[in-house]
Image 1: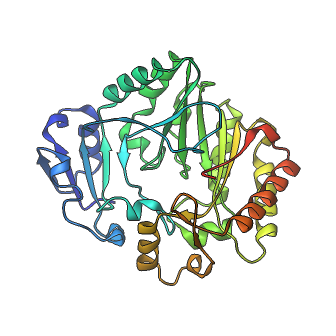
Image 2: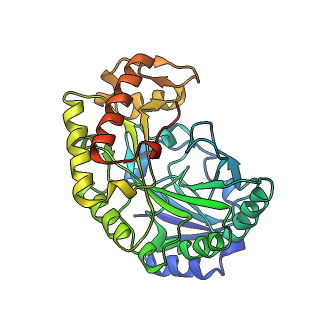
Length: 331
């Protein structure tokens, strides 16, 4: 998976680092002073991740918990995300990370105690439930067998009844999660799309069936689940594809007890849209009619977006999801 592993001296004695180096003992290893001195200093093509992906291990400096954008989660409560990693092992054609960092290399931050401290400080500023999201710059589950971080966050949030944690993922890597006791205030949310769409644009990700099986196993033993239908991409037989998706979801899951389902239509910042055109010039994503929207993002025209979202909501309600559990993402 990795062509080289670079480890900050500050974490070289960490048991997690020792475990990762043992697992990848055939991979060249280098000690460094600071990740920021190397990562992204020289622009590295996004698609270089296919054959030359480096792994950085170290500590995140600066602000660790940040306020999430408007319409990021359920309305009415403050939402934050925390930074525990950069970049993803998957390769989705629409992924905004291809226009965000100057490098696709994976960075895993190991100073979770510092993140936990900042989470507590953030909670202290509010007198209502506060949400924290993992997976803004990475996938929350894909590498948890390496990072071993989940027990820390489960212990942390077990003692934070005023807070909720969301683990956002496209992975079916639930092995480490299943070792833990489910908690009501920790929700694992899976991004889903019709299987044909996953094969076309969600490159290297687990199939829909594998994700649904993982979700069913988690739900069976009591883990709260969320679903993100995001990004929704319009195509021929769009309604039929999503009708089939909801039918498959209903085969595996108790949809009435899903914590929430978010709906978001495909969108790009200008820089990401440029990278998509550069990296995937044959992608059918580029055949759509896009406009610059209210927030500067490139999207379908508003009437078309709301027609799409209306259809998805209709299908969700028919499938048994509770209306109060549905929300629009980034609209």
